[in-house]
Image (cartoon, rainbow, N blue to C red; front, side):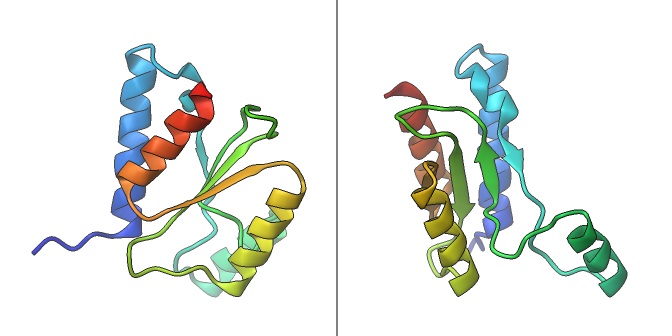
Length: 121
């Protein structure tokens, strides 16, 4: 049995994006950026990150490319059993109300398909 993790799915997405850029497909994907808000950290590192602007609820990835009338594309990776926290739901609402495209993807494939759709329509 293979155990699928959010981190593994996100890493697979980044690998795919880098391959697409190398092939000359979707060059905008070179600017897809991870936001390292999650994870367990010691108190000192966590305090430093907050002082530097880390924000609870920030989503996993952002693509600062305008398409489809949206200012940018934000992506939250989850696995099938994952769920959004209340803080993430609030952040998603804020982004959506302010003209950003937001997708919650439950697999590498969903995330990939959402990015392709965003960039090509």
